[in-house]
Length: 229
Image (tube, rainbow, N blue to C red):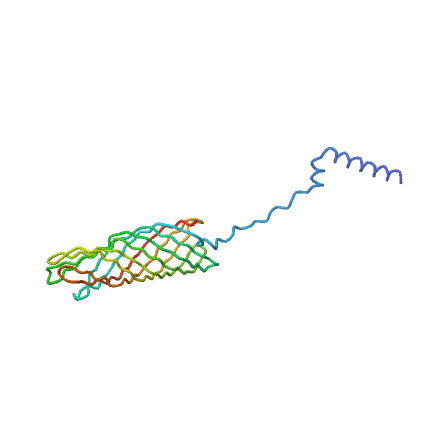
């Protein structure tokens, strides 16, 4: 009985050794098991899409209403503006604070007759610039709602036709407020729409026929594409 038990054990050992020798890959696999599969890691949440330096192009429409002092009338003008914008943002979570400015060209023009129709005053804003602070909240990682406020400058042609008329340039300074929304398309590009109200100071322009005062308020509506560095 014991002899048969010993023979069975010896036979099992021989078979096991043979199987191991004939399958080196299996022996290696047993000695070096494969690493466990990697767990799925979702992509990080883009919570700083609006941070850093940026530049862009903008275009839109504008209206300007001039308080035509001394003539009990206004000059209403309208047209378009377009140009370049740029700035820098700091972002911490949903909070975005930054500084931005733009330089615009355009044609925002109109005219009004006065002096019983003998004279006509015209106004045409052709260049604008401003520098503003911006603060906003990213309501989602890709959508920013913001408000802006700062200083503004504009140059306008202010011709007067008729008796005692002439052509003059006017330079206006003022303050500007506005707001809008910006949507991140990807890590580098975003689209933006904003409204801006600007209250300019009064410009007095002397002509051979007298002196006129122009006091414009301006509204602009613009769309922009922005590149983030």
